[in-house]
Length: 365
Image (tube, rainbow, N blue to C red):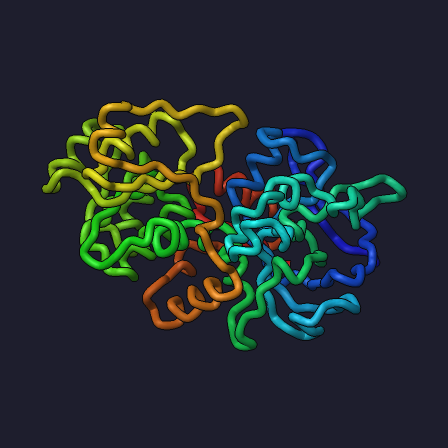
């Protein structure tokens, strides 16, 4: 079938909307008509060649839509079901067997190699191969093919135009707080970086009852928004002394810290804010080969921990519906971060995101 898709052809180049040929879904695949899809920082990192995803490729990994067709082996969803498409996993490795899908032993190839496990792709243009299956979906398109492993059925009355970001950015930030770090009532946390991931973490910290929620960013408008959605304190590093200001809040430091920037210097600052036995989570995307340097005495003497977090440690089948219900209750207003753009304005959406004018762009198909 013919579809419309945004194709990345050259590193750091613009995405071009093109007419492509999409194969029919295989026995274990699902064809989804995309209603809306979020734009994530990871899409831009891949577009810029920071990670080794082959070109040309259709990116997009925060898709929400309606199932149109399913392969013969599919039982999880049926045509007409509203769904969110999230990250892919193999289903058979030790992590998947332990329901830790975001730590699948094949996470990188299944999500970043932009092809099926057998190396084939579902997209082409006049005989030219176009890479597909980015994060098991390639949802910068009118239609996408996914699998049971990475499709989540959502309530029939759920607003699909809002739900795409739950697939990655929102799930990652909220899950880091609620699952990976397991922040509990009365505890403290600092979130470094207040993009959509960091702000989702701030909202989640309020949901679980954290009493000290510090937002750190160089964008004052984002810091003001963070205060509106749950931050109790907001610090701009440009004003200096962030570590000292956080430690001055009382006690021996914070219970938790979360880095969403992927910058080594910021991670070091986040660690410096921890109390003994505190834990810092890292989930920002960094270039291949990046390294982190810590004060070893500070790290070891207090039993502090540093952990990597992927997709918020989430079981998407249960976590995404939970976030939808929290939003309905007015307790998790992730919709306030969203700005809608027509699909044809994808480059405008990307530019606004990069300039900090928009927190979470969502493309409407």
